[in-house]
Image (cartoon, rainbow, N blue to C red; front, side, top):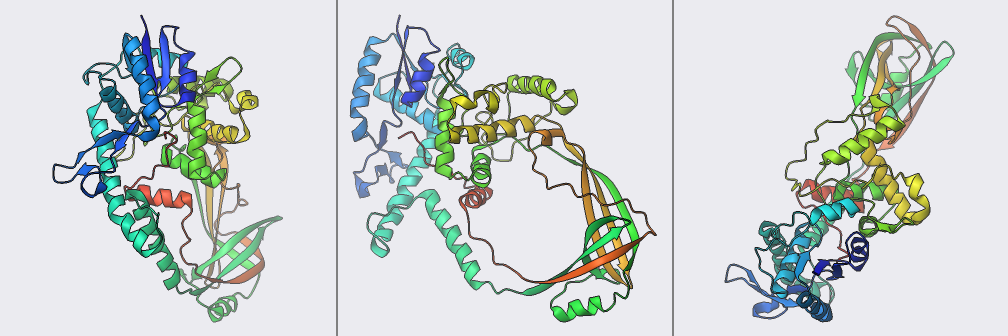
Length: 477
């Protein structure tokens, strides 16, 4: 008995074929095989007057692929559709089903969130039917892309340059960028001043900043305001009016979604969005670790922060072995953001015991950077909160008030893996009624700054906040 398995990418087919028996033939569709026709009324490939019905044709560059898949399907007893586990992948499976003459209700759809031997084999135990809700969601998105693009692009050709294209997301992103640029041009800087002070208690020095006068917060608008404050300081002795000590907990960050990975990769390892998704695709589809290719991370297109119980158990075991049981927060619940589709898990390592150090020799420089980022974030997300001792001190002399803040890590928790805190800055021990010495005061002039121009990371974040989650160009095609 022979089985045909169709995936999206050739590299993924090589990895999966290693996990299946010789009865399985794994082929690739090389991305989408059909798209909206560029014909008909207005060239849209969408019948606007008939409930926006799409008209699909086989893409010119995929005719040979389709011919090969049809030939393989005729020889096979079963055909399994193993495209990616998102709405694009579901739509590709639906198009394949149509072209290969498969029954739409057949349970021939296999889905795995990670390309490991167990995940792949388990997916074939319980195949399902194609999820038409996901297919419809993809079709709606594609139709919108076509309508928006064909409506705006001709205007661009006329007003800007021939050959430019506009899209559903790009057009909104451009509007955000233009609005921000107009804000910057219209911005008028305002002068303000600060006074920083160096103080000491005994032999230990610490920093404090001017807060206000006579119990009220005061903004320093100019040098005259500064001089009025300094004129009231007549000696180096300041009284300690108030000391507030608290214990503060900082929870671990959530594991990565597509958007948060793109933002962090841009900010921490200087990856552009396209590069992040390209390298993530490589890690997902499989890296040769000496004994064959293996998927190192779960699927990288997700808006969910959910982690499977199996992965939670594995992380708890690793954390307990490496750091001790007090570092593991095993069993805690994670709530997704509102609007998350939660189709599959957050982005995480397929096997947490494969530390970046243990597989570094098999990865290139970029793969190692991104895998390390994902591995650290996932492990941290399964660890306990960091605990800080914080201290806030209010100093005064003749009605002039300075405040100082400090903190010190009491228990590092998740920060043993993922340190996202500023350096510790602990103040000397002080009590109300103590006297401290002023060493120096340093006035400084500032001007308010216009809003910053968008970087790729901040633009993605803004689109997400406005329910227009940006998805990077897909390596499907």
